[in-house]
Image (cartoon, rainbow, N blue to C red; front, side, top):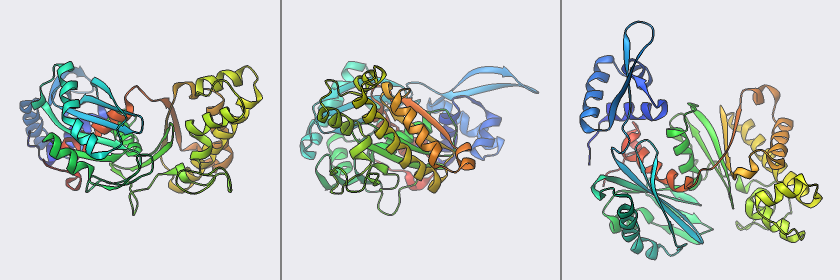
Length: 383
């Protein structure tokens, strides 16, 4: 395993955010002297982690731009959900080189027993040598103790106090990092999203709704690791029961699972986001009510989040069919109606579709972040 120091990590982090940068730009971004940058970039090039990509003429002398080197090292990412799992291989730039769908196992011992074979099968199909794999990240819905790589509680998986990182690391012989799935997506967006915000909130609209807060270079976890979990904000007091044991949570109104259940209850033939958006566009009042109610509830929850946290940006990742339809429109109207105008003007809302394998890629980004890219020594972990 490549041994990197703090200067190396600062520069790798800066390049992951910038994509390409000159040594002068890196010195500013990483807070290092030009001499330190010259030494550290030479060492990183010797390690094979970065490369000179082009020379550009700006003001003054021509500058040589540096970038992370594709395929230099690899990180495996595993996304775990009931009914389905997915494993990917990502390089240091966040590029997915291989992916593999897995059975939806929920027993931790079965998952770890199959993990080495799953990884070997993925590597065999990609042509990537196992020695180039730096570590693995695992993302899971629930509350995670990231310092111990332990799942404290996952209602979806039926888990409580599962030391998944230790179990998986023993099975693989590699460092394994465990993270909440929304936090993993936030790390991926921070490292490879390319938008440069120092603080943002991420909301993942899927079967369930996930949330994460990133302040500066650090996730804000809260006292018990559950910060950002807007899924269980009450938006409909006394409403539908939630899997958490409460009633009227955002998850019971605005998640894909909740919208599908509402569609079935109203006798609609199609229950996917695309089905509902299509039916609403054709004037079906039942679909209109479902999408509008869900979007309005999500927008209200986001408005509270914006008022409390005041992030530079709110990043929403959802199904492609919902990014520009009635659901998104109702959500934006609700945000605009419930946030103070001056605060709303300063908060960018970034709505976009999740790419295929996003949760697993987020898990791989957790490994890249904590094993190689972060300059904060409290986030590091060795094999």
